[in-house]
Length: 143
Image 1: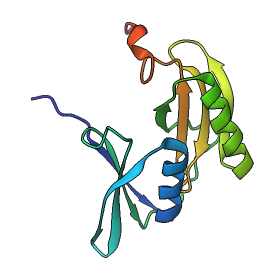
Image 2: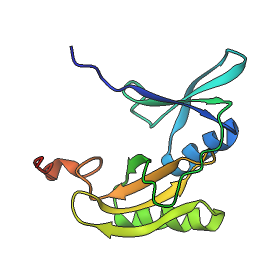
Image 3: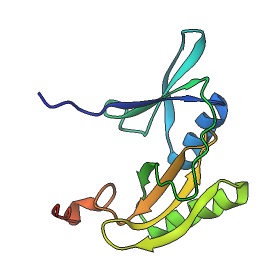
Image 4: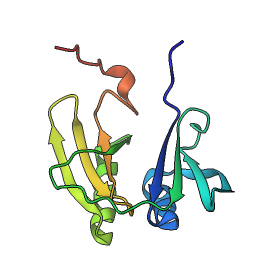
């Protein structure tokens, strides 16, 4: 049997701020919420992916303080370079842009990075062999 990655669960310092961030920038929506273990537990997913991958977020986490050269992140693909530029522009305006748009050699592509309200980095990319348009791109062989 092959395991399938189905969710990522995070404790966050401000649940409502994180919900708003993932709705605004990632197009995710709440698909389930309940009271549990003394707090509210929220499941969020991208439309159409409710049965394949979700974020589970719960209050109580500490703000993450990632170094500028720490590239730990959640990755979201978008369908154009222009979307990257618009996301970066909006993020810059509200003070959460951490990586300005940049081009990197294949397979990285064009991307920018934001900081969510919990301190996690969130990458938005175009041109990777994952996400929109990836069907036409080969995944490089391992070396």
